Image (cartoon, rainbow over all chains, first blue to last red; front, side, top):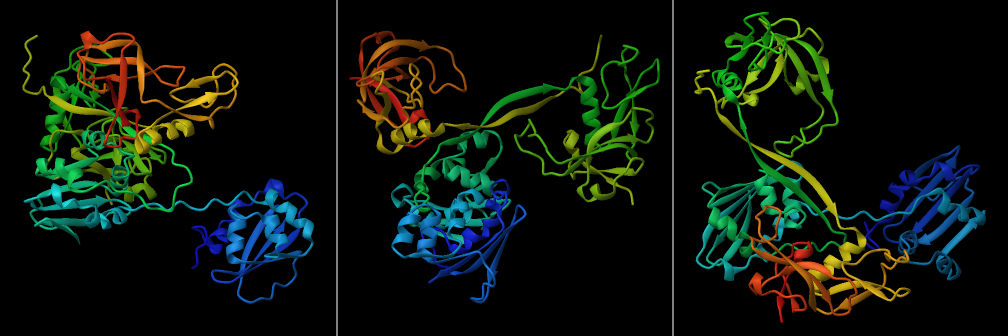
Length: 386
Length: 151
């Protein structure tokens, strides 16, 4: 596909329906025929009727009925569309021919919003592909190391940069015994390399993990020069910084919550029972919320239970502990564990696969991590007992 | 109450607040000049005959849009006023003590705030001439102009 001014005729017509302004089309009932000639050209028909626009690519030069026909070469068409070429001038110079109801051409700016060429997004693979050329041998003297890139998420993958004898070679996949390995989401990696995400903040927030020789890790910005995006000159560079304010906190559990968390280490769910009213509290709390007396007695409940309430969350706010947003949709439920009654339900997450048919009264059981550490997330989620 | 504390422990947590700071069009051009050209630009209101730095889109006096009247300023200026920062904070750009000064650059009518280094805080004086030192590492922040030093 031939590009002109960094975009193609096809790209422009692909966005035609999206750019259509129904509010600007009142009373317009017309068919625009485009015969775009030359390399990267083609024939398109836009049918505008009843406040809607249909774009059709034609295989032959039979346009059928049309109100107005525009004949133009591909380069001029793109140039005029993105504003690099003056439409009136092209028309006077005979580069753009209009046939039929010429006044309809005046309606076009009202009918469609302006086309904006897509910005090419740099991918992690693009950036890593430049590793060898960004390698600075003078800053890597005497080094015999392997640097791994383990990038998760969209556009991710695994690569290893092998640095030896003043040369650098990039390989796909992760080698064994890496000197240092970067573990980061591909999206964050790109932001880091483009300077949009501060490495120190990303590291502090746990979004960038470096495993291995930290001394080498710190030298990496010197071993590789900064990545420069060579995407066709940006029209206007705007500075936006993504920052993460991170505040270290310490949370003292106290003996009551501590006992609950210690129970999780043994895959036990502990509630405490009020000596006066017999109510169970889950998670346990220091005193009974109703009787205001100390509560010392603990009982194991569950592990299975029934769903009393379930939310399916589509719009999640970031988890304040990590700054990450949970993948949506996810289910959050209240489970009345065996041995509990009334409102003694525990909040937790639901297994993704169970989202489709979860309902009140369903029987669920916890799914534990392999090595519990005494955290509420020792239970990964609850799943339906099927 | 004699309670055992074998069940008490401390969980490390981290409160992370992700946010985005957008410098705006005018702010971006200012920062990009610092980063790429190592030059300080201000904007001039022709009507009021005032040069503002850091640049602003509209004149604070007549509300005229002045975002296209860029003027290059000198990299040296005069300390108009200053303060010595003596407490440590994660958000602060330097370890204390360090000097934050209002510096009026040659060609500007407003002072800008920046760090003054290369001199003991006790010796800084109002009226002192200082010169800009630019950063080698791009940060996309005002710290692309790293600090000022006495001439």
